[in-house]
Picture 1 (tube, rainbow, N blue to C red):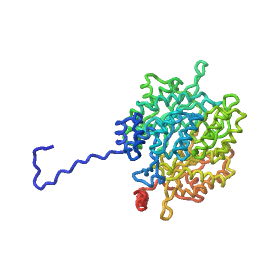
Picture 2 (spheres, one colour; picture 1 turned 180 degrees about the horizontal axis):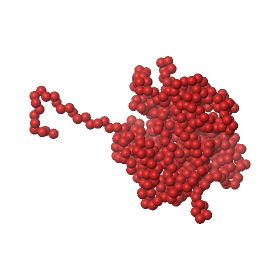
Picture 3 (cartoon, one colour; picture 1 turned 45 degrees about the vertical axis):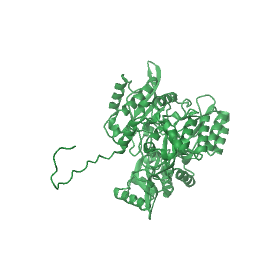
Picture 4 (cartoon, rainbow, N blue to C red; picture 1 turned 180 degrees about the vertical axis):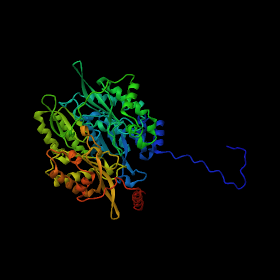
Length: 590
């Protein structure tokens, strides 16, 4: 603007006004306001026709996720990139949403065919009951979406700032001890929120669990919303409804969900969950930072309480939910569903196969689908522990199913460490990962089985490649968090140990105990710890109870075999600078 006032001769020119740099959160919010990716499927088809070079940055960095699609890492993980994210290769990975883990044989066979045709014949079962494909080219993505749609499946809403796959008990409708079959509620919630344009723009991911079983095998404690079945009696009449928990989540700042003082009637469940989604959607304060944008941050960062949250729910509903009723929390229940179990249907059984670290081949998927059709009614289920179930198998057919799964490399009588192992994608495919996890977990399990064949305890061994906890290490007996340490001139994969995580009656975030070692040294460390447990445990004492008897210093000494000072989970700032310098020097950031 010309003010008409001349500057004094020789006076310095006014400094140019530089607009502030757009933050990551601001960029994502701007992109979400600009477009609803669910309405833009034709854009994806156009990219497939024009080739990968035609894809604009807003799709690579954001919009693809609303269709369950991520660009695939180049194998180096975060170490191969900059600004906290690794480089992508030319391929994509895609999550297929399976609400409540429900799956039919024709659907699994279709996924196997896609994997074989476009995905190098592999897929992963995830901790949210999804199936994840890899190695998809942009040219293959429209065909993949169409092939999934032909069998009633979709990747829509499996990623992005939306309601993710709604999880539930894999034995819904089958378990002899369930209070109710909650799968219709899970499916109705998924239909209400997933793909609904009113909820395409949430502050961050939104995870929901609905279960009618007493084991809570869908982990309501770590979901944004967790519905668990409870019963009450009024005038002698039994009614089954739900307790509701909100604000659970793991990542780098874990928080276990808080219970609201409410009894949600069966017919109220979908409306209540929708109302909670509306509360989350409308929190502008959660849109300022991507690292503080989950529902849990209302409790951990903004001072919300369960009472305040319930007041908001009741206000939006326009009526008061009934007060909560006592509930029975599951006590040290193992939730993997591996084995052969009778169902409540007379003469019917579930056969659960252990899928080590969730990795499954096209041939294995096809074999499981064939077995489900030949010996059952064609129904299967996926689990939160990355396993696969064939259900509704007549008793006389169970032996044939067990044999067929064993021959396919999906053991039903899986050993302890195999059953308890969970692994995230790791550097093989993830741009945020620090360590490789899938092959490593297989090696680790084999090492432990060889070293400790006498180990007789059910246990959860979770391997996650970075602090984001996609491998859920915070709720494991042993949680391994991927790090790097320097050996000589090289940075090598390492793991930081967290112990004693649990859910249910003894829910507890795993304790970071200050011990870190190279990945290759983890088997020896765990052998030392487990041998001390086997020789020093009290009668019938499980790992959770054993760990609770010892201090962090004592457990660290049991792992290390000597007394050591604790180390930080993350490198101090000056060591992070060293790591960044080494990455530049070796060309890792080019």
